[in-house]
Image (tube, rainbow, N blue to C red; front, side, top):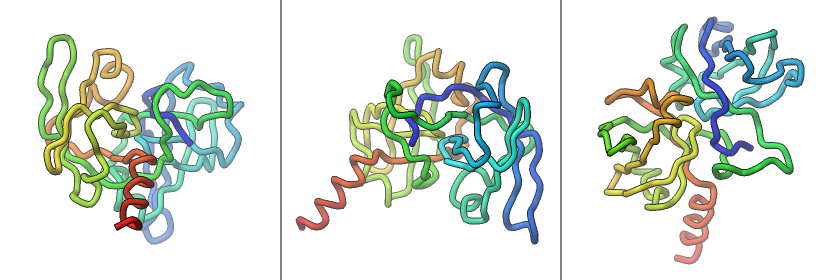
Length: 202
């Protein structure tokens, strides 16, 4: 489990097909001071742009993961290239401060950036999401976008907006996003279960 509080921006260093090319091995470089790599065990979970991946190899300033064909087709990992910058977060430990909201690292679908508009010192971003997950996104609720825990400002049909302060733009991939880009969306776990209970009640 994660909190959606990104702790560093990594960079894809290498992408290598595995077997017949349906799965991929990705090597991710980590920024100086992101973590003591010696404390990360082999097999540890690391959220990469909101997608929970398993570290299969570790180096002094990098880790490698294997992404299945399913993951590549359902997340933005399928369009990553060497040099792509990605949000990183290590898993939540019992007793850690929960600064964002509970994030599982299981991407529900892809959103599309519709607009980024300056709003005083911040930026208001608008996204479109598939209809199947739009109903789980509510005003003042939580959503994870590329692994970043955010509060939803407004919702209209299959679109919603969030506000990004300068600090968030500086320390996450939001500073690199542009209109038309795809992003990983994870809906709030609470919303998922509330909707499920409502379906049973109906």
